[in-house]
Length: 110
Image 1 (cartoon, rainbow, N blue to C red):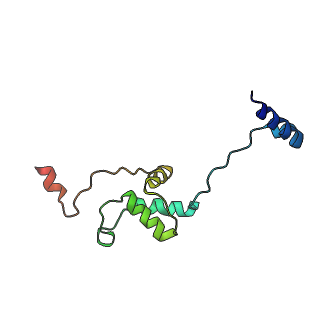
Image 2 (image 1 turned 90 degrees about the horizontal axis):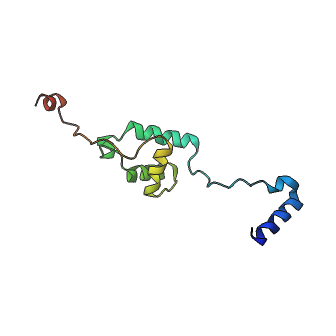
Image 3 (image 1 turned 120 degrees about the horizontal axis):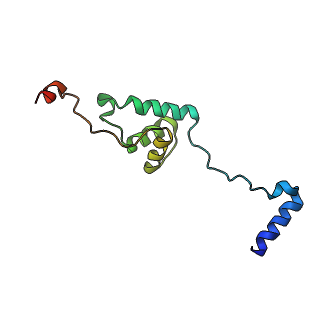
């Protein structure tokens, strides 16, 4: 045991008694989005992009990042969007997109 550790323990015990020897909880960074905002992001992602309005057929992390910044003035790094999606029980990986004018019946008949 290091001498400094023992000295710290003695100071904590003298200041707070036996309760001072308990491990203090570590702080976590403050969440940037409120629970309501996070729910709105999840609903927006699940709704999917509008090809006419957004010009996209699927969301990319970069698109979600830009939408969150425009909507809530909260900046995230592009890589952090994947972590945010995971926390919202979503995935940044999507299925292969299909063309909006494709005909499924013709494709399955072939």
